[in-house]
Length: 157
Image (cartoon, rainbow, N blue to C red; front, side, top):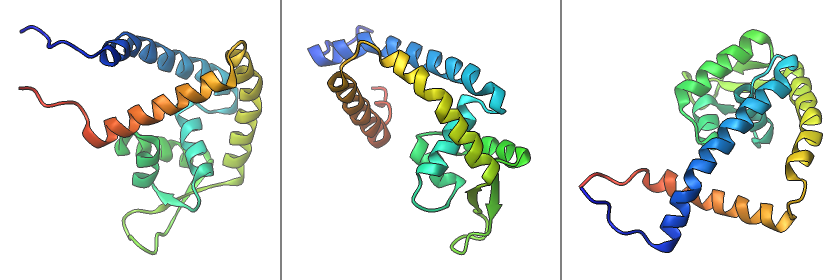
């Protein structure tokens, strides 16, 4: 079956998709190496960051939604973080079976240390890029994520 013709924007996005996958993979691997001495991985760091960014304690399902991640994967990471003492679970007055995930002092310290390590790393990655270019990329990624969250993949004909 022959693929239908794409718009110019669709073709440009298609050519960019592989680069997005490669950048994501490389950032995760580099992030893993960066925070490994802290007992973290990129995934654990991301969960801690999502907890820090939340306005109030949230259950795992809400954290997963905010991350655009699978709830079961986030639950596994939260369980690991709880075993390591970075988070604790507290009763949720709105849902008995969905405890709230709370950051412990050790979790806050690990996150803050990870962010301190990240500053020079991110500055090196951003070297030579204009802030406006990065902001444009962020806007494009935000729109793509929103559209993917709304529609998912197109059904097969």
